[in-house]
Image 1 (cartoon, rainbow, N blue to C red):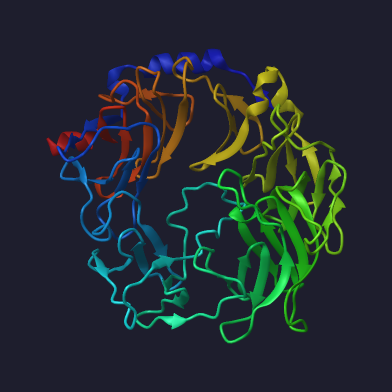
Image 2 (cartoon, rainbow, N blue to C red):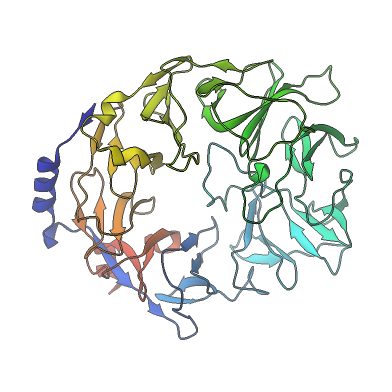
Amino acid sequence: MLNRIPIFLAVAFACSSALHAEEFCAVPLTVSNSVSKEHWGSRTEVLTVPGFANPFIKLGRNEILTVNDGALTVFDGPPLSNWSRLMPNIIIDRHGETWAYTTIREPALFRLTANGIFERHGLSGLSDLDELADPDWRRTHSDRTDKRRLDRDGPIFAIKSGELYRVAETLPTKVQTPPGWDPRMPVPIDIDGLGDFAHVDGRIWYRTGSESSWQQVARVKELLSLYSQSPFSIFDVLFIEDTGRLLLLLEDRALVGRFDTDLQHPIFDYQFSGDIVLDQASGKVLVWAGEPLTQSRTDNPKLIKESEGLWEMTPGTPSRVAGFQALARTTSGGVPYMSFVSHEPSGLTLTSHSNGFAAYDGESLIDLSEWREGQPATHGNLRITKIGNAYFAKDHQTLLKIESDLSAAEVVLPETVEGLWDVVFSEALDSYFLFSSAWENTYSTKDFITFRIVRDAPVGVRSLSGDVASAHSLFGNSDSDAFLVQFCEETVKLK
């Protein structure tokens, strides 16, 4: 299925790179005197909150910035009135309300009004708060990225004198916490239709609602080192109400169990460790068998170990996935290096394995051996990902575009790869953009066959980090310049 067509791509690029064919222009931003250019680089983030005109921009270790009237300035208003060096915590709750809170210097909570203004919330009855928090550990295996700032739906909690309060409109309500909980620990997490979960030093607690008591339902050895990954960095709960099947997915393992109206709390039958793959079409959970981050004789339920390969988390005991048999992908040092994506055009789940890639159809695994044809052995670092509405396998040197029929064409990049490069999708501009700090130009494309130079973009772009919706543009920066990528015809209108 791998189509290698570098001659055609090169010709297409050569014919399309003339200036008259350019569609996008880079508009430089005036940098305010209050903005420090120290530490500018590739660690850039843009956060655009629906209904709020000003973007939040983080450039390196400096203050949070924004774009205002063609200038890059320090963000100094609500919700960053108290502290402007960290991004605000944004919550879009289940009623559609948008909240923002900060915890540095003085905890402050803001609500986005219908007029597009963040307004300070009173927190009636509480003063001198110690902290505000939300279940920001609600990461899922279907989205393992850390750029989830608009995916958090609360609830919001306030902490005062060691007590936990749930913030509901204007009246905070005191929360009964599980045994051993203290303010240094994550706040409880509520799962719609199921109940509340919390973890305290590796003990997993559950209750059906705010009026019921906490019960311990499982135990996993916690990892307290600041330099190591915790099993609880992901906490993903899947509950199939019709069957009562329940899966608790942590960073490094799945806990498989059941819960129904006849039970007072969930019952977990076993743990199984490794890299988790979710098949959205069938709802099945698969795991590439591997070693857990932590384990202890006191772990409950029992950790089951099986031979290497891909296993389905079935009730009672895991089952080996039928079809093609493979091993989990790891780095040369044995560290897991797995990736997977739900490929919507085919309805299949694509996953990496030790010798390439495979597709899961809900019943068995199918090897995509054609993708390896003509590929050098160094391409074992390719990771499957979805960017915009397209699917790719990508590493530091190579980009394969995965089509709807699962054929994979290697994209010939517009310049030689001599350093870090990346590809991003802009919803505001409905196009893909490729850039590198080692390239002379930045490029746009819609089909990865025709590439167009972005006019006036600086040399050595370090980041294209996100859309600025209010300006219908894409924010970018080099080590010393900041700019907006826009349709050239729009930049002409502004002059």
